[in-house]
Length: 330
Image (cartoon, rainbow, N blue to C red):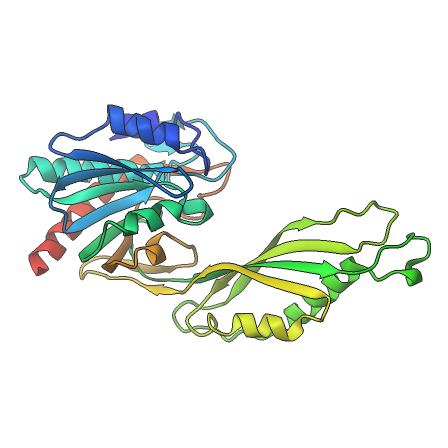
């Protein structure tokens, strides 16, 4: 398992660059007793699927990572580098669990490695076409070796602010799009979002702020994106709230969004809730979604990303137990 993880972390699989890694895993790491299938998304990105018999449950995580690439390193109990916990460490423990289950005589599951989780879940959307009637998917993400009961939703909004350019020495002759943006965010800060008893606060982050104007020209156009983390009590209301504070020179584009989710849980495991998104909403053909994995989400997407080796081995034993419990329930 550790050798496999260190091997796949040598690949820069930043979102959009997963295909070389997918081909490498398919050709070099096919588990004994499995069939290997390559799935191609509409965007020509690749998934890898190892099938053991006729699957009743799928173990799934993602091939892609956020930038920048950080090569792997390790000490006696910690593996460092991009993807160590999000999510190549997840792929490693799930594949190891599959190998062990197969060696114990089980053959009704699959291991799915998808592309594009970090930028739109293209791989999961593609894989979902083949998952009709499936009862369970276990999604590997860094949850601190706890089962997740619920996760926040999300909403990505692109906002264009329009104005009229002029010489910055005579600002009264123009109409500043940048000023319009500031006033919009002043109104946004005044909005009240009720707390959710399960998922707590609704939060948002602003990024991709761009304006083409020179520093000595009043801006006639500014664009940015807002990414909301939504809760059960706010998810349906945010679009209306944003429309209510936008003037006639402010254009809102609701790019995509996923609703908050409740996950399937099993007695005997510690549980938690999370604020991050996963591929789970894309698996519409699967009845029960289970979210679990080693590592701390606080370390993910940072320069210090890491995972404890002991947590990887615990995850193998935990997911085997989860598998056996849900299969016995059926």
